[in-house]
Image (cartoon, rainbow, N blue to C red):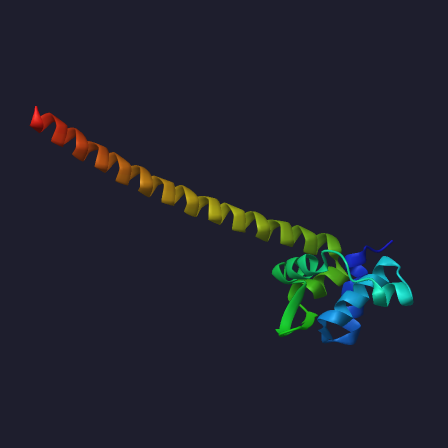
Amino acid sequence: MKTIKEKVLEMVAKQGIVTRKELQFIIFKAQGKKGKEATTYRCGYYGNTIKEWCNNELLENHERGFYRMGKMGKMFIKTPEKANLLIRVKRAESRAKSLSEYAQALRFELRKKSSQLRDIQYILNNNQ
């Protein structure tokens, strides 16, 4: 059984370039909504989902408000397990990089504070 993401990406691949509204309608159809329910229902976190899919390169922003299949999206249609694994690896690498940058900033602040503390101690020792 295919996931909603797989169904959506297959429909986007068939249509080529889709608008945001069409993409949302495709998501509704993949969820099993039909007819009037699919056209009138406009609530939910679909913007977050679309943004996440763009960040994972499943979709790419062609122009403002227009989307098309991304590199990972093409791979996801053929082999979803491999594509999910690559997405997880990229996400882990990104987190590791941001943690490394944060640790470097903390080291800099620590050196700065210890230097200020030495200066204060020097001033206090010379004033006695």
